[in-house]
Image (cartoon, rainbow, N blue to C red; front, side, top):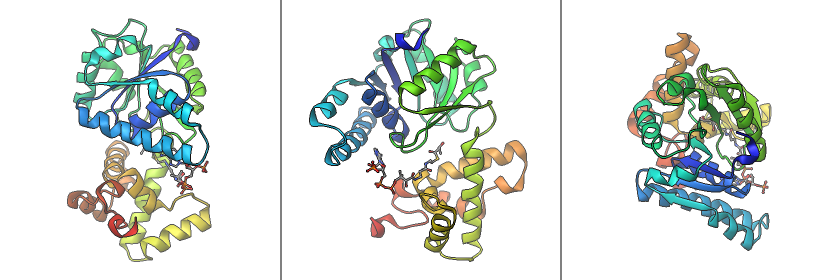
Length: 289
Ligand code: 3HC
């Protein structure tokens, strides 16, 4: 398959990452088919996209006609048959192997033989996921960053089974989506999360041991290391549960103590203090926003 043959992109999962990918693909001129398991999830995804486009409109970065055209390119459904037309499918559903396996099984009778399955997984082996499908040679990791419309990077992760033509077309497609591809071996957390998540975990340890307030730690890292967001603010943005999950996964894999999330992070997950999405994390969003 050549990149110019890709006209329609399928996105499975309309959560924060899925919605961002849908928006990016539709803004790049692709027809986009979106699949999720419930209408309510699709509606939430559409709300994320509409809000994001409205923000661009209010800043005069797009016209009202362009906004309408982007929305018109998007079709949403809970029926896997919607993926029949997709030339390239990006999976961004929940991080559970069984759910991803079920998704690939539901797509198999519907999609064409050449269709590529890209996974946005941040914590599951791409090789493991490829082995669960009927087309392991056409599975590749395509790891986007949040917020997708803003973040320029996409990590490209070939599974052990992926053929070079699939990697090439994924790299070309990433460029057509306006992003910068960086290839990476199929290892836990790839490049960015393997470096970023331990930094966040270390910041949580510094906070836990009473060195400074959350706001002062974030201010220090923003002004002293030129980060756009402090590490604790970023933890709330990414989700404390995600930080915990990735930290645990890296710890299990490497057995290096530095990856092991501290008690505070584990307790925050148990308490449901998951960051922005739950209204409370290192910061209280009911008060702050
Ligand atoms: N959709 C579209 N545009 C958006 C947006 C969205 N959801 N969110 C922000 N923007 C745009 C704004 O319109 C603005 O554009 P402009 O500069 O052209 O006017 C620009 O981004 C900056 O936004 P704001 O002025 O509202 O706010 P900030 O300057 O504070 O930037 C931020 C917000 C881009 C989120 C910035 O704080 C940032 O880069 N934070 C770090 C994000 C990061 O590290 N993400 C990676 C997380 S790890 C991950 O995703 C991997 C996963 O596997 C865990």
